[in-house]
Length: 222
Image 1 (spheres, rainbow, N blue to C red):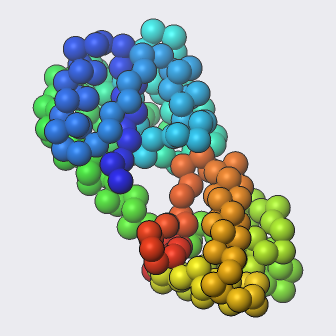
Image 2: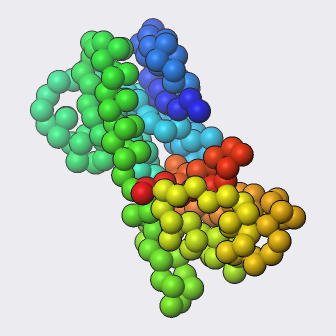
Image 3: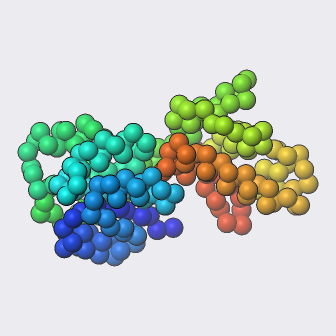
């Protein structure tokens, strides 16, 4: 599936050049011009996988956007700026940016940096974000307890115990519900959907449960 990159840039010509380079390389670009618009998109269910964020925006500084963003998401951020002062780069990186590109820049180089950052993000084990407390029948996500039903807990526990392994719906039915595996496939799908919603309520970028069409589900991070 194509990864979405949010471009937060008020100069249309720059945004267009970045969007073209992204489309050429297989990404799906999305463009907004204001910081408040960016934060709204990043809080939505259709949140992007990476943000290209201009520091000089009309309504607020890109630095402020990043500060607010880091209160609810760890989505990778690349800053764009016309300023090249070292102190600006240091401040940007200290508040949570992943990279820093000074204008003028090559859109192709920017896309290459995006690929590197996304590879690094995907390589981080998703299971590391979870803490399974089996004795308490509880799972924490990013340090926060998940409010799970019995079967949501058992389903997530099974996936956590087999990180990176693709488990078929039949296997999940047998291990979680102890039911006939060929009769209730939709039960698994419904509980996975519910789990995803609860994970995204804590981290809007969270999608550690991978769907393998015709095969089943896995938890990223083996």
